Length: 275
Image (cartoon, rainbow, N blue to C red):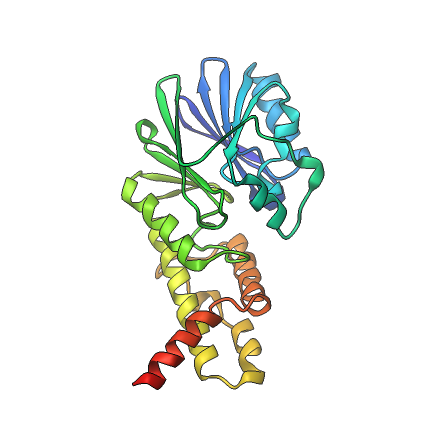
């Protein structure tokens, strides 16, 4: 577990479980949290550092998306105002590994956008569906950063139960905002180039899978997809971290089990036949 100061009023916490990230925005002794880590042990550490060691009080907890590996701390701050998108239940119920004991009904839900003035910062909570229907990006212009949630996973993306086109669109919208720092839902912070890298990974993975589905023998398709190396997809000059390698493997499993990109391969095949 580690934490890092990103600015005079911004702290980033990275837990042990799933390297899940929480970002704390400070207004004097008051804290607004964006996400709250992936396990109760990690969340207790977060509370100890912020509240016991630093003497802060968590007033608001906002969720970029309502999956269990990002909302563990909500139950530890019972007096805090909790905020989520109105489709939060869809994400919670559709996740692969649901932890019902971490669920806390948000007190405030909204549809498209909300701005919170927090000390010297304006936090723009913007509905940016990609990995999940309820996904939020938190754009903080004065701090030159955006909290991306799980619309990126480092220099990659995670596809399970998601529409790849929606993920690509969500990343594209964050690129338009032009912030210098991107805080991921996992691993930590990155320079803005991580957004281009994530799209590069998504595009190369899609191309590889579509080619295999369109041209491979049916009984060999899954084997070939499962053998796609991350090096064939990652952006040039990027050395994949162990976490990115792990989630690339999970992507390949999801592509096989959920028939991801099968629709795209079918469209390619139909276009070729029409010619």
